[in-house]
Image 1 (cartoon, rainbow, N blue to C red):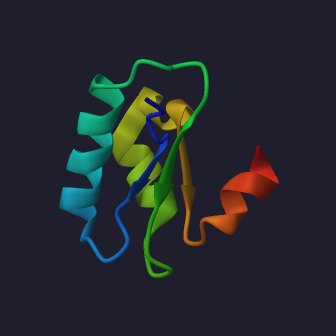
Image 2 (cartoon, rainbow, N blue to C red):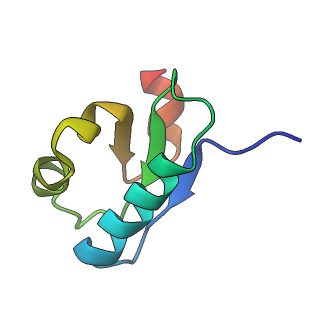
Length: 72
């Protein structure tokens, strides 16, 4: 079974987005690759990264799933 390394937080406000990211990071088996997080175009990614603290290095935020392929 293949587990997706991407979670969709598009449309969520910052607090639920942060919660979903934290939950996904705790349950991850493959910590070698970043967790891809799809967020809305209006998401303040810098603020979200600050809220994640050191965990921000394990997360890749994008408003379009195509951006994940371009970065990896």
